[in-house]
Image 1 (tube, helix red, strand yellow):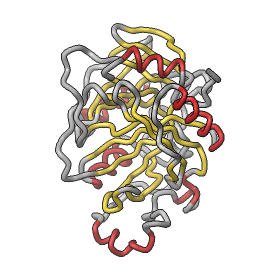
Image 2 (cartoon, one colour):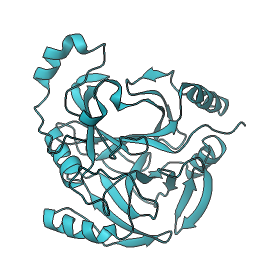
Image 3 (cartoon, rainbow, N blue to C red):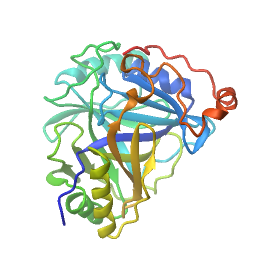
Length: 316
Protein backbone atom coordinates (compact mmCIF):
# COMPACT_ATOMS: atom_id res chain seq x y z
CA UNK A 1 0.00 0.00 0.00
CA UNK A 2 1.37 3.50 -0.84
CA UNK A 3 2.52 5.69 2.07
CA UNK A 4 -0.18 7.68 3.81
CA UNK A 5 -0.29 11.47 3.35
CA UNK A 6 -1.68 11.92 6.91
CA UNK A 7 0.54 14.21 9.01
CA UNK A 8 -0.81 13.92 12.54
CA UNK A 9 -3.85 15.36 14.29
CA UNK A 10 -5.83 18.27 12.83
CA UNK A 11 -8.61 18.86 15.36
CA UNK A 12 -10.85 17.30 17.96
CA UNK A 13 -14.56 18.11 18.10
CA UNK A 14 -16.57 17.55 21.28
CA UNK A 15 -20.05 18.16 22.64
CA UNK A 16 -20.20 20.66 25.47
CA UNK A 17 -22.65 22.27 27.84
CA UNK A 18 -23.77 25.93 27.57
CA UNK A 19 -21.77 28.06 25.14
CA UNK A 20 -20.79 30.78 27.63
CA UNK A 21 -19.54 28.21 30.13
CA UNK A 22 -17.48 26.68 27.33
CA UNK A 23 -15.89 30.02 26.39
CA UNK A 24 -15.16 30.92 30.00
CA UNK A 25 -13.34 27.62 30.57
CA UNK A 26 -11.33 27.17 27.37
CA UNK A 27 -10.58 30.79 26.52
CA UNK A 28 -10.67 32.26 30.01
CA UNK A 29 -9.26 29.59 32.32
CA UNK A 30 -7.16 27.41 29.98
CA UNK A 31 -6.04 30.41 27.93
CA UNK A 32 -6.63 28.98 24.47
CA UNK A 33 -7.11 31.48 21.69
CA UNK A 34 -10.73 31.79 20.54
CA UNK A 35 -10.40 31.72 16.75
CA UNK A 36 -13.82 31.20 15.23
CA UNK A 37 -17.46 31.72 16.14
CA UNK A 38 -19.66 30.02 13.61
CA UNK A 39 -22.49 27.47 13.53
CA UNK A 40 -22.81 23.76 13.06
CA UNK A 41 -23.12 23.69 9.28
CA UNK A 42 -25.57 20.77 9.55
CA UNK A 43 -27.57 22.39 12.38
CA UNK A 44 -27.24 26.19 12.05
CA UNK A 45 -29.23 26.87 15.21
CA UNK A 46 -26.24 25.61 17.20
CA UNK A 47 -22.88 27.30 17.65
CA UNK A 48 -19.63 25.72 16.51
CA UNK A 49 -16.83 27.24 18.58
CA UNK A 50 -13.12 26.88 17.78
CA UNK A 51 -10.04 27.28 20.00
CA UNK A 52 -6.40 27.03 18.94
CA UNK A 53 -2.82 27.98 19.68
CA UNK A 54 -1.53 31.51 19.18
CA UNK A 55 -1.05 31.13 15.42
CA UNK A 56 -4.23 29.10 14.82
CA UNK A 57 -2.35 26.18 13.35
CA UNK A 58 -3.75 22.72 12.56
CA UNK A 59 -2.90 20.29 15.30
CA UNK A 60 -4.20 22.65 17.99
CA UNK A 61 -7.89 23.07 17.08
CA UNK A 62 -10.34 22.03 19.79
CA UNK A 63 -13.89 22.65 18.63
CA UNK A 64 -17.28 22.33 20.28
CA UNK A 65 -20.95 21.93 19.58
CA UNK A 66 -22.47 23.52 22.72
CA UNK A 67 -25.72 21.64 23.18
CA UNK A 68 -27.06 23.07 26.42
CA UNK A 69 -30.05 20.69 26.45
CA UNK A 70 -28.08 17.55 25.63
CA UNK A 71 -28.04 14.72 28.15
CA UNK A 72 -24.65 13.92 29.72
CA UNK A 73 -22.61 11.48 27.68
CA UNK A 74 -20.66 8.51 28.91
CA UNK A 75 -16.99 8.09 28.03
CA UNK A 76 -16.21 4.56 26.90
CA UNK A 77 -15.52 2.18 23.99
CA UNK A 78 -16.17 3.59 20.54
CA UNK A 79 -14.83 7.05 21.41
CA UNK A 80 -11.80 9.22 21.79
CA UNK A 81 -11.73 9.20 25.57
CA UNK A 82 -9.05 11.81 26.41
CA UNK A 83 -7.68 14.86 24.61
CA UNK A 84 -4.19 15.92 25.72
CA UNK A 85 -2.26 19.15 25.18
CA UNK A 86 1.53 19.45 25.23
CA UNK A 87 2.85 21.99 27.76
CA UNK A 88 6.44 23.03 28.53
CA UNK A 89 8.40 20.97 31.04
CA UNK A 90 7.67 22.25 34.56
CA UNK A 91 4.25 23.68 33.62
CA UNK A 92 2.20 21.16 35.57
CA UNK A 93 3.03 22.85 38.89
CA UNK A 94 1.47 26.12 37.75
CA UNK A 95 -1.62 24.31 36.52
CA UNK A 96 -2.03 22.44 39.79
CA UNK A 97 -2.23 25.75 41.61
CA UNK A 98 -4.54 27.31 39.03
CA UNK A 99 -6.93 24.38 39.04
CA UNK A 100 -7.01 24.28 42.83
CA UNK A 101 -7.81 28.01 42.95
CA UNK A 102 -10.59 27.63 40.38
CA UNK A 103 -12.16 24.47 41.82
CA UNK A 104 -11.37 22.31 38.79
CA UNK A 105 -11.62 18.52 39.13
CA UNK A 106 -8.09 17.16 38.67
CA UNK A 107 -6.04 14.12 39.61
CA UNK A 108 -2.56 13.67 41.03
CA UNK A 109 0.26 14.10 38.49
CA UNK A 110 1.47 10.80 37.04
CA UNK A 111 4.28 9.68 34.76
CA UNK A 112 3.66 8.05 31.40
CA UNK A 113 6.30 7.19 28.82
CA UNK A 114 8.71 9.25 30.93
CA UNK A 115 6.55 12.40 30.74
CA UNK A 116 4.62 14.11 33.53
CA UNK A 117 0.85 14.01 33.02
CA UNK A 118 -1.93 15.99 34.71
CA UNK A 119 -5.47 14.67 34.16
CA UNK A 120 -8.51 16.90 34.73
CA UNK A 121 -12.12 17.42 33.74
CA UNK A 122 -13.92 20.31 32.12
CA UNK A 123 -17.09 21.52 33.87
CA UNK A 124 -19.20 19.38 31.52
CA UNK A 125 -17.10 16.26 32.19
CA UNK A 126 -14.84 16.19 29.13
CA UNK A 127 -11.61 14.34 29.99
CA UNK A 128 -8.45 16.35 29.30
CA UNK A 129 -4.74 16.07 30.03
CA UNK A 130 -1.69 18.29 30.10
CA UNK A 131 1.54 16.45 29.23
CA UNK A 132 4.94 18.01 29.74
CA UNK A 133 6.96 17.73 26.54
CA UNK A 134 10.34 19.32 25.70
CA UNK A 135 9.14 20.37 22.25
CA UNK A 136 5.90 22.00 23.44
CA UNK A 137 5.37 25.35 21.71
CA UNK A 138 2.75 27.59 20.19
CA UNK A 139 1.24 29.16 23.29
CA UNK A 140 -0.84 32.31 22.84
CA UNK A 141 1.31 35.35 23.62
CA UNK A 142 -1.71 37.59 24.27
CA UNK A 143 -3.46 35.07 26.47
CA UNK A 144 -3.74 34.88 30.26
CA UNK A 145 -1.19 32.06 30.70
CA UNK A 146 2.58 32.69 30.73
CA UNK A 147 4.31 31.12 27.74
CA UNK A 148 6.31 28.83 30.03
CA UNK A 149 3.05 27.08 30.94
CA UNK A 150 0.71 27.85 28.02
CA UNK A 151 -1.13 25.23 25.99
CA UNK A 152 -0.01 24.97 22.39
CA UNK A 153 -0.57 22.01 20.09
CA UNK A 154 -2.14 18.73 21.07
CA UNK A 155 0.14 16.12 22.51
CA UNK A 156 -2.20 13.22 21.74
CA UNK A 157 -5.63 11.70 21.76
CA UNK A 158 -6.48 8.47 23.55
CA UNK A 159 -8.83 6.05 21.81
CA UNK A 160 -10.90 3.27 23.35
CA UNK A 161 -12.28 0.99 20.64
CA UNK A 162 -14.31 -2.18 20.35
CA UNK A 163 -11.55 -3.89 18.37
CA UNK A 164 -8.14 -2.45 19.36
CA UNK A 165 -6.17 -4.83 17.14
CA UNK A 166 -8.05 -3.74 14.03
CA UNK A 167 -7.76 -0.07 15.02
CA UNK A 168 -4.02 -0.52 15.47
CA UNK A 169 -3.69 -2.04 12.00
CA UNK A 170 -5.63 0.86 10.50
CA UNK A 171 -3.30 3.37 12.15
CA UNK A 172 -0.11 1.58 11.07
CA UNK A 173 -1.06 0.13 7.68
CA UNK A 174 -3.33 2.85 6.28
CA UNK A 175 -2.82 6.11 8.19
CA UNK A 176 0.96 6.37 8.44
CA UNK A 177 1.50 5.76 12.16
CA UNK A 178 4.19 3.63 13.78
CA UNK A 179 3.71 1.72 17.02
CA UNK A 180 6.42 3.18 19.26
CA UNK A 181 5.89 1.79 22.73
CA UNK A 182 3.76 0.35 25.48
CA UNK A 183 3.16 1.62 29.01
CA UNK A 184 0.98 -0.70 31.05
CA UNK A 185 -1.99 -1.50 28.84
CA UNK A 186 -1.49 1.61 26.71
CA UNK A 187 -0.15 1.32 23.15
CA UNK A 188 1.42 4.41 21.61
CA UNK A 189 1.42 5.29 17.92
CA UNK A 190 3.32 8.22 16.43
CA UNK A 191 3.32 9.93 13.05
CA UNK A 192 6.89 10.59 11.92
CA UNK A 193 5.76 13.18 9.37
CA UNK A 194 5.24 15.84 12.05
CA UNK A 195 6.82 17.10 15.26
CA UNK A 196 3.56 18.29 16.83
CA UNK A 197 0.21 16.65 17.50
CA UNK A 198 1.80 13.38 16.41
CA UNK A 199 0.59 10.87 19.01
CA UNK A 200 -2.38 8.53 19.25
CA UNK A 201 -2.68 6.25 22.27
CA UNK A 202 -4.86 3.17 22.31
CA UNK A 203 -6.13 1.88 25.65
CA UNK A 204 -9.44 0.44 26.76
CA UNK A 205 -9.67 -1.02 30.27
CA UNK A 206 -11.88 -4.11 30.54
CA UNK A 207 -15.32 -3.91 32.05
CA UNK A 208 -16.24 -0.32 31.18
CA UNK A 209 -19.63 0.46 29.67
CA UNK A 210 -20.08 1.32 26.02
CA UNK A 211 -19.59 5.03 25.32
CA UNK A 212 -22.68 7.16 24.83
CA UNK A 213 -22.63 10.40 22.87
CA UNK A 214 -23.67 13.47 24.81
CA UNK A 215 -22.35 16.42 26.77
CA UNK A 216 -18.74 15.91 27.84
CA UNK A 217 -17.78 13.45 25.09
CA UNK A 218 -15.73 13.69 21.91
CA UNK A 219 -17.78 13.66 18.71
CA UNK A 220 -14.90 12.92 16.32
CA UNK A 221 -11.14 13.09 15.83
CA UNK A 222 -9.69 14.72 12.70
CA UNK A 223 -6.34 13.96 11.10
CA UNK A 224 -4.32 16.32 8.89
CA UNK A 225 -3.40 16.25 5.23
CA UNK A 226 -1.55 19.14 3.59
CA UNK A 227 -3.94 19.81 0.69
CA UNK A 228 -6.84 18.59 -1.43
CA UNK A 229 -4.66 16.31 -3.55
CA UNK A 230 -3.36 14.55 -0.44
CA UNK A 231 -6.93 14.15 0.79
CA UNK A 232 -7.86 12.37 -2.45
CA UNK A 233 -4.90 10.04 -1.90
CA UNK A 234 -5.96 9.36 1.68
CA UNK A 235 -9.54 8.63 0.62
CA UNK A 236 -8.31 6.14 -1.99
CA UNK A 237 -6.27 4.33 0.67
CA UNK A 238 -9.33 4.10 2.91
CA UNK A 239 -11.43 2.69 0.09
CA UNK A 240 -8.73 0.13 -0.73
CA UNK A 241 -8.80 -0.91 2.95
CA UNK A 242 -12.53 -1.64 2.71
CA UNK A 243 -13.69 1.46 4.59
CA UNK A 244 -16.45 3.82 3.47
CA UNK A 245 -15.33 7.45 3.65
CA UNK A 246 -17.78 10.17 2.70
CA UNK A 247 -17.29 12.34 -0.36
CA UNK A 248 -15.35 15.54 0.30
CA UNK A 249 -17.38 18.08 2.29
CA UNK A 250 -16.55 21.79 2.28
CA UNK A 251 -16.26 22.99 5.90
CA UNK A 252 -15.25 26.52 4.84
CA UNK A 253 -11.95 26.55 6.75
CA UNK A 254 -10.89 23.07 5.59
CA UNK A 255 -12.20 20.27 3.43
CA UNK A 256 -13.23 17.04 5.11
CA UNK A 257 -14.01 13.39 4.65
CA UNK A 258 -15.46 11.24 7.45
CA UNK A 259 -15.49 7.54 8.19
CA UNK A 260 -16.16 5.23 11.11
CA UNK A 261 -13.02 3.26 11.94
CA UNK A 262 -13.59 -0.47 12.61
CA UNK A 263 -13.42 0.00 16.40
CA UNK A 264 -16.31 2.49 16.37
CA UNK A 265 -14.61 5.92 16.59
CA UNK A 266 -15.68 8.57 14.08
CA UNK A 267 -12.60 9.82 12.19
CA UNK A 268 -12.22 12.78 9.86
CA UNK A 269 -9.41 13.67 7.48
CA UNK A 270 -9.17 17.45 7.02
CA UNK A 271 -7.00 19.67 4.86
CA UNK A 272 -4.71 22.31 6.33
CA UNK A 273 -5.95 25.10 4.01
CA UNK A 274 -7.81 27.39 3.55
CA UNK A 275 -7.51 28.25 7.27
CA UNK A 276 -9.37 30.58 9.63
CA UNK A 277 -8.18 33.83 8.07
CA UNK A 278 -10.38 33.07 5.06
CA UNK A 279 -13.19 35.36 6.22
CA UNK A 280 -11.66 37.65 8.88
CA UNK A 281 -8.19 39.12 9.51
CA UNK A 282 -5.71 36.88 11.31
CA UNK A 283 -5.42 39.43 14.15
CA UNK A 284 -9.20 39.53 14.68
CA UNK A 285 -10.11 35.86 14.63
CA UNK A 286 -13.23 35.03 16.59
CA UNK A 287 -14.65 38.54 16.79
CA UNK A 288 -17.76 38.13 14.66
CA UNK A 289 -20.28 35.41 13.91
CA UNK A 290 -19.23 33.86 10.61
CA UNK A 291 -21.71 31.90 8.52
CA UNK A 292 -21.11 29.77 5.43
CA UNK A 293 -22.65 31.12 2.22
CA UNK A 294 -25.58 28.68 2.33
CA UNK A 295 -26.69 30.03 5.71
CA UNK A 296 -25.93 33.74 5.23
CA UNK A 297 -29.47 34.55 3.95
CA UNK A 298 -30.80 33.21 7.26
CA UNK A 299 -28.52 35.34 9.45
CA UNK A 300 -31.31 37.27 11.26
CA UNK A 301 -33.12 34.08 12.24
CA UNK A 302 -29.89 32.32 13.22
CA UNK A 303 -28.68 35.22 15.35
CA UNK A 304 -32.04 35.32 17.11
CA UNK A 305 -31.76 31.63 18.06
CA UNK A 306 -28.16 31.79 19.33
CA UNK A 307 -27.45 32.91 22.89
CA UNK A 308 -25.24 36.02 23.18
CA UNK A 309 -21.59 35.28 23.94
CA UNK A 310 -18.99 37.30 25.81
CA UNK A 311 -15.43 36.43 24.78
CA UNK A 312 -13.06 37.40 27.64
CA UNK A 313 -9.94 37.62 25.43
CA UNK A 314 -10.82 37.78 21.73
CA UNK A 315 -7.71 39.46 20.37
CA UNK A 316 -4.82 37.55 18.86
